[in-house]
Image (cartoon, rainbow, N blue to C red; front, side):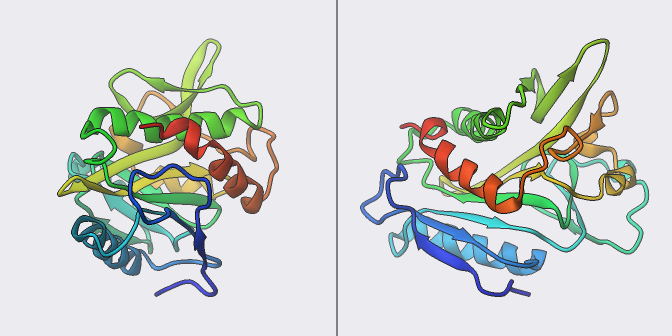
Length: 228
């Protein structure tokens, strides 16, 4: 189901290698996960055939557990009443739900350098720079997906998930930042197959911003992360 009143506007000033301006779309309310998959795939096809420009699409979903291409069935522990979906994105299990900002990136990676590993790092850098704007020192962990907050003398906590799918060198899926979701939902899975760390959110870390404020920071940091 589509969300109500999507805010769709040209991303004026946002980096794109294509002649058509990058579109920055923000959906109000909750966007059904199956609807999002259909729209993302269609947009990726349109970008490749030249009938549409790139798009960044910011949404929230009703509760859903999603399995990436490396997900282990045994890591789905207790989904309860939440939707469960297999996807073609990279990564393992994650959860999406209210209070989490999901950022889908339909970008022409062929025109952006044709380097998948570099592109994934750019998505991670986008999240790291955005969190840094609010005083959080986030970082990568070698060999593990996502963005983490390191702890002195304790395992790190994950604050954002990353999962990319590539179709004919156009990316879809993207990242998810925990603003203020129900973190107990992550107890239903082994998040991203990693059991030596917890899960956190901006609000839990004392950064009690609104979703609109987070969205504006994502927009401000986009060009710094996605240079080409």
